Length: 100
Image (cartoon, rainbow, N blue to C red):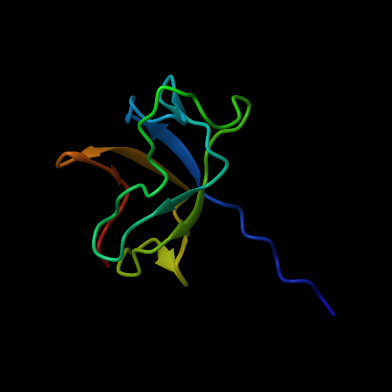
């Protein structure tokens, strides 16, 4: 039996959410983030805290995306080559989100 190919998780190419505990120099250091709350492409992993989180040697990736209507989404997985995260209307969103 042949194993299914492993999907490469999309990288977070830039994060401008400077107050996020996982952000350092516009780079996300969470191992994987979750995007979306079904109707809005928010970064569910965003955490404003004084403590820094994540692994400094890791560049964040998209682990799951709940935005089924995004053109990059298939089976609740992001298939964009990379995404950007930043502030949009007073919340932290996936800026790569595009309605299908």
